[in-house]
Amino acid sequence: MRAGNPALQNKTFSHNQARFSDEIMTINGTVRRTLILALLLLITATYSWHQYQQDSEALGGFIAIAAISSLGVAILTAFVPRFAPVTAPIYVLLKGLSIGFISAYYETMFEGIVFQAALLTIATLIAMLIVYRLGIIRVTSKFRLGVLSATGAIFIAYMISFFGRFFGFQIPHLHEATLLGIVISVVIVIVAALNLVIDFDFIERKANKQAAKYMEWYAAFGLMVTIIWLYLEIVRLLAKIKARK
Image (cartoon, rainbow, N blue to C red; front, side, top):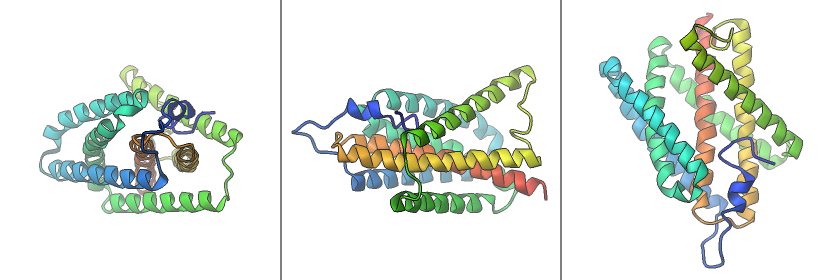
């Protein structure tokens, strides 16, 4: 059974088991790698945030290239986990540029929204970790399948919406500040949060199976993918709520 986060799959770890002479993956090591990646993300996000304030139009094309490049690096990392010690930092550096740009855009519309979204993201991360450690949510095969299915459905909806723009088609309410649009965003945020629980469980189980040391970077990469997604969805949700006031 695969984890909710496509980047963290059982087969990935089974193919990257530590050999007797290798260092092994640990949870503490994964936490340290995650903090490093978060810091790198913050650095480039801060840079693009300030650049947006100076000339948002000139920055747009550069951000688009960074966003496409980050997707390419993410795909490479997913297929070749051994590259993660190099590609994971590159991914968050590139992703940080688009995160900073998007955040600055929403901040110009709704002052204070970025701080609120960041705070809620951190709070959700901590809450999900507590929920997982206390065993309040049992990560069963059915649970993983349910979250994975919901995540896939959301991805398909976003893809249809993205390509639909070129043909004048949009999925109703998905990006609109309607009551149903807010409900949809709430559901997506919940699904993103549940992915965190699956990620925690997956990392712990594979650390116990003594995966290779470089998989700490890969696991941290997968967790950052979920955290970034959660943050963006919370920003969108808050923007919809504020737009209705």
